[in-house]
Amino acid sequence: MSDETDHADHDWPVLESRVEYETGWYTGGYDLVEQPDGSTKKYYWAELPPAVVVLAHAADEVVFVEQYRPTVRETCLECPAGIVEDGESYTEAARRELREETGFDPDGLALLERFDVATGVLRHERGIVYAEGLTPVERDLDDNEFLSVRALPVEEALSAAREPPTNDATIEALLLAREEGLL
Image (cartoon, rainbow, N blue to C red; front, side, top):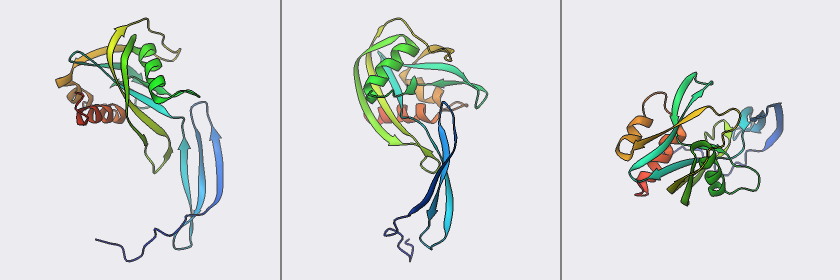
């Protein structure tokens, strides 16, 4: 099936780009874009800093965190995650977030994937990092982190992560690790 009109050559000129609000967490605005037929449309976006999601694997278990998410008003089972700070790589951010949130320091880290998230509305990159060889250390939670650590057997991890409320990043991390033969 093909479209008779090929829009691949259209460069989608941005006629105006406007920031409408800024928060400590993200910036939101729109781009006024010229479409292939010559019409214009505002494409709204939210811009967030890059984030890392850590698939922490030790023995035959996956380490999760459980935390209340006010946006969905539910407690979620998630892989440890957080913002990549300026100057950090995804693996450096993964080590820091894993230590802070779970109290584990990994012996080995590997970036499984880096991708853009929800490209229809977000300007946001996510890295999925695999961590192994976990050594207990002291946790150092941020002042807005109220979470508990929960380890599950590998064979139960994906099923548990798919129980509502589900989390896209956690499911992505589990599926990527499984695809790479790490779980």
